[in-house]
Image 1 (tube, rainbow, N blue to C red):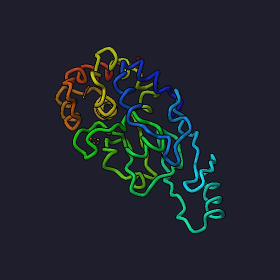
Image 2: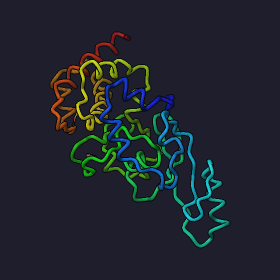
Image 3: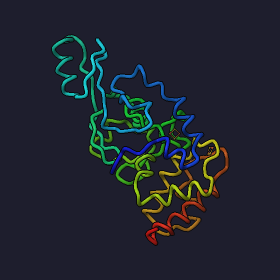
Image 4: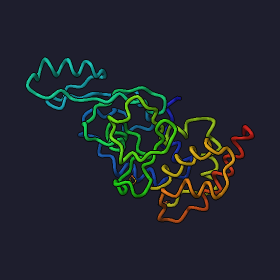
Length: 237
Ligand code: FES
Ligand code: FES
């Protein structure tokens, strides 16, 4: 799946200005090792990685080159670790700390901030939900190194998938985002609901979204948007 979706385009198209503001406020990527150089750019391309030596600051676009440099130049320091992740169809090596959660990794090292904002960070709100091997999972409660070899899908990847374009359009039409903090998590679960049920009932949608808390009270709008999108996807529109 192409990952060169413009995050801003998605947010604009989705009317998700709140998410954009929240994501920008929560980034602070500049000093983080292994951050993609496009982290603040309009287009998030997760293959454009720069790996930076945490000792001397030398940068390279190849993780193995970083390890070689590190071993030769700083033999007494611990070699930076990486996780091999598959995110929205892209296989990437991400420079991480072993204790980093998937949410931290998406935010700090990958630059995909839709599902990775500063929310409860303790498994209570659902805003950080991503799909792992097709099932919803809380990225704040999952270590990045745990999900190596699994398919990780974020709201950016779903929005870039032409099949789920009707879901983006329905989210716009039904104005699902108020402050927008919960919206990427709800949107991600929405894809899961449609792929699981095809034509979900209101009860099924409400049950599946039960772990996604919206303090702005947009729940009914998600039901309407998901049902409308499910019909459009089923009819091939
Ligand atoms: S931030 Fe993960 S559940 Fe709230
Ligand atoms: S839109 Fe504000 S928390 Fe859901």
